[in-house]
Image (cartoon, rainbow, N blue to C red):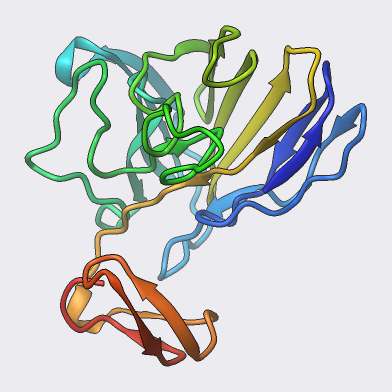
Length: 239
């Protein structure tokens, strides 16, 4: 959660893929270690090969930026600035996109790495707003692109739902896939934000575990009740 972002202040957020860390209020606040997705097997250094970048017409007619270099390939849709695919060199896709995913304005892509901003899930402070924020179902502009990186941007105008802001997402393809999300408050008010880079990983759920949550009580949205969890948490059916 970011509290009290003053007018005209840029904030660069490290999500750690799912949980945003607080950013310090400053004229230009940058957290050096931005969100990274690392291959579970790592990527060994390879001899440099010709780098290639292309913008193609993707699903739903939305532009897709394709990055390719010696480390692998990545593909990002302008719909929601959603990273759809990351394939490290010599490996399979790290990300999952549902075969039933829809690609149309107003609908979120089920899979990849959706951008949830300026709130995550349902926000009691914005009861009239959509789930997971204002940007994941809209078309972003491709601002900058090169062989190994691309930048996307979107603006939200002042409304009864949320003050005005501009958001940029930078995607850099290297040994790790590096995502950096920057919020620019365009209003005269201080605002609080929550969000996530909500990665969908291609994995065998029956063998998956989640570590670091700690043991204790959690609310299970599937069962709609609280229950006890262990650390590591093992996936036994939907969670």
